[in-house]
Length: 200
Image (cartoon, rainbow, N blue to C red):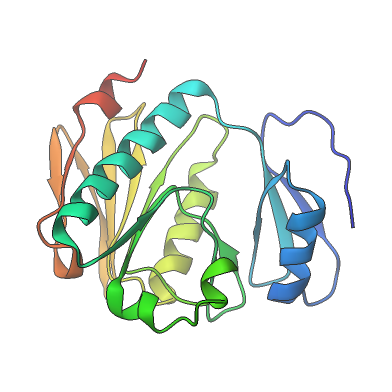
């Protein structure tokens, strides 16, 4: 089903009032390749507006640093914002940057690696853009953690804060920092926040 939307300056939601399978959503994305879309566990498709250049710069900086570390550590693979993950709840979400261990990647058959990944990332980073409502992003972060992500970061470049999410503990918001070290499976990754805070 192709959709035509007006020019967006904030996210738009489409509700088909029925369960949307991963196959249905993949077909929807194939028919609407110009749209950036995610699927909620309730079957709502959210269409995101194109990113502004500063938001794109910040997201790419995070993904680039994570990729560089992943290539050195060789313990997993890093992904940028176009990667989609099918979560146990049925939601299909795309973080701005993510990392998946080699063990999880190897659990996917070669054909599965060419589609939306039916695995939960081991680490995700979301970068807030001006069009993102904080409350919506917080719900998304909660979805990542509920789905089994052991570590997730929400970066707000304008506020110069990072909120750290982990299972079983409340989110922790950090400010006034210039770098942040990961732990667990991504132990050794240190994100330099200097350029992210500076923006363009």
